[in-house]
Image (cartoon, rainbow, N blue to C red; front, top):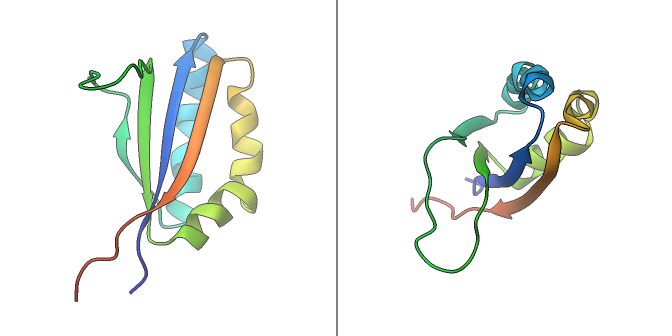
Length: 102
């Protein structure tokens, strides 16, 4: 069994009306690659350090390869254009998770 993978995203939305178009289109792309939202906005607070994200999202995929394919190969390439100009910043990192013990 391969380890899951996670996309960790921090963003600052500056045009919510435009960003809503992206929010409406992204879930279908995510689902097509076996992904799901674990966190999509919501309440958060910094407990240690000086990281002060405006908004955080966490997406889970069955594998690192599926997460990469979602980002690089599929319809998401077009969907991500919907958020251009709607955020001050949009940072995304892909990290491999821990395989569940057998």
